Length: 201
Ligand code: SIN
Ligand code: MN
Image 1 (tube, rainbow, N blue to C red):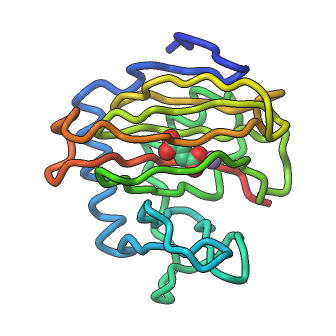
Image 2 (image 1 turned 180 degrees about the vertical axis):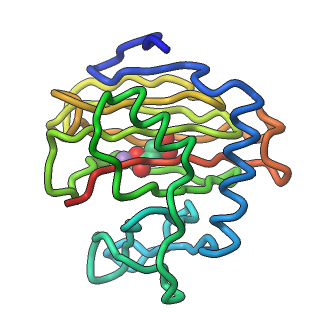
């Protein structure tokens, strides 16, 4: 599919996944979450994050008082489950890369969860893009600049939307201001799931 919008250098593919594909992805995620349940990481200042997390792939992103890093195992000690084939297909389609992502971070946002403005910079090679997939409730996504300050713009992401942060937009600050509880019926208990695909090393 062709991108539908570019905002601050980020490419959006709105409605990339149709409702049937969204349901198939939720079914695949259910298997992953059974093997590697959601946990709530702490920030490096010891504050619990409002999102719950798990991952698939060679690495999962992890955070505690020691800082932010990638880990080869879930906190329980199991290796992370494999990234679903349909997610790898989506990555190939929107990036055109033969290199596969090492990490599919899975973030769950309940009604009150948000994600402060940050850069994705725990990876080795910033020439590799970051791809994010939204499922479930709508979320207000804020995009800024490579510098911490300056103007920002916000856009509502809805279930099935894909965002690619690549090129000059790879290191822009971004975050989730809030979700709109009850805006989607996709997840049985409500809420939002965001998948973030990244090449790590
Ligand atoms: C993130 O950048 O960590 C998450 C973005 C999102 O939830 O859409
Ligand atoms: Mn991010």
